[in-house]
Length: 603
Image (cartoon, rainbow, N blue to C red; front, side, top):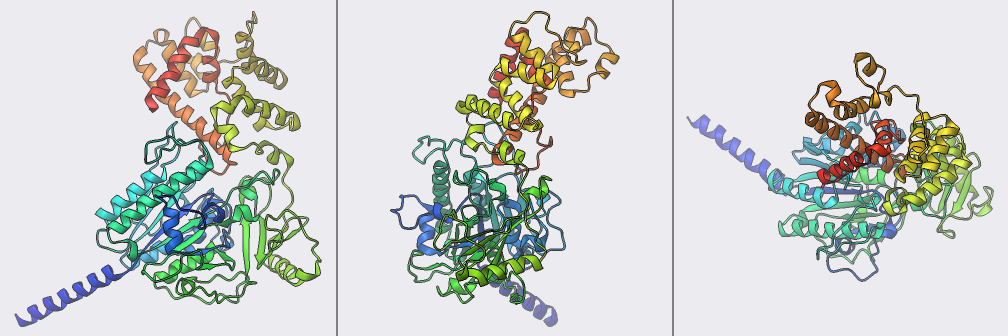
């Protein structure tokens, strides 16, 4: 009996000790934001009343020269969670196959140490197929896109995170990541806390993010979590401005697209100057932030001084604002977008101190100290920075990073239009004008041809659609245009369109049309001839058509964003037979009904 009592007592003491260790452990929250640069968060300005950014400015260490290893979200986020460069973890772009299981993710370390772990994604391209779900008890990527919003806004994501913290991680240390793509979606409507609608702009999305961060941080404070949580606000990439019209954002390795926001608020409350004074100006990479996360989780840091591009933990500068690493430590930047799209090879750059080398066929060198916006390339043999230039070139060569050859002009032409031109309804007429101009520049581009035809159909520009159909021998485009222009005896050679007016419909007729969506439409409008229930077929078609149109919206947004996502129909954005058929004059009432029902159902 004494042995049993002794055993139970020891077990109870062990559980109490384990419970104390779990409760004493500090939590880690990573907030990863697309398109957030250091210049987007101004710690010197007068703070709004409800500003999450200003809370971080007051209590965080601010890194003024943090660089993302890739302008693409998935490679950058993978580096943040592995402490490895893309060439090491092998995730080079936003497509498959994703991170291999052999690589250790910080969440796996946290889970092994009894942290509660969670990941909340705001949408594409960060889904579990990226392989980043490893080690997360909850990986919430259940996004239901709608015509109103293709993403789950940060406000909703933050609410889901707060609910998880209070219910699932109650009283326990957690390791959590929230991915925020909101800043890209400048045409998404946002509402202030006073109920006022903001205008549609990047600045409005930034204000919404700022306010939502404030609400999240206030919740952490009121629940006693703020001083027990290390918070990392990290930009994954930047945004390319008008100063580089021929530089695709997906491949731009200049500072405006790679120098990102980085704030780290330590868990312990310390007496410190505001981050305006406690800031680190030396170059750091998001790879370093990954090593820092491992360090915070208690992992020993491997000495990487012998590596070509050494990564290091930033934990020491969270205690004292004195960086102890060489200012000329080289950082690697890369984009695998061209590889992914089969448009060209890997593109790389390297930066050391204030010298940026773009590793193109004709290398470009910039002194970022005197040329902040990197607009004036320097001679490669400039004496003052020649040793640094030669060192960076040698590192790139030894690690087999070849020079990048310019993209075919079609790519820079067809992806040159700004996001707002594609996404704002009031600019669609201008979009069509721009697409027609670009098609003249690149007449052989099938993408530009399809995109122009789709927007011409949307705008009911029948002359343009007729011209495109006639010139490119697309009889359905020409037929629809001629019918709307009142051309008599307009004809089309298409077995699917034959079903619209066929006296009878048999199996052979249906087999000749290989368009499932069109056949569902025929089942509805020709229900009597098919011996089917008209109401049943109507509902079936409308459900399929809604999914199709939503997919079209995704395709369109992907083009506007520079083809940064894997989509379900291989990036095809062109008029479908059903859209064309619904545009026939005799189906004008039917078309109005179908599109009205789409809108009502979505709302």
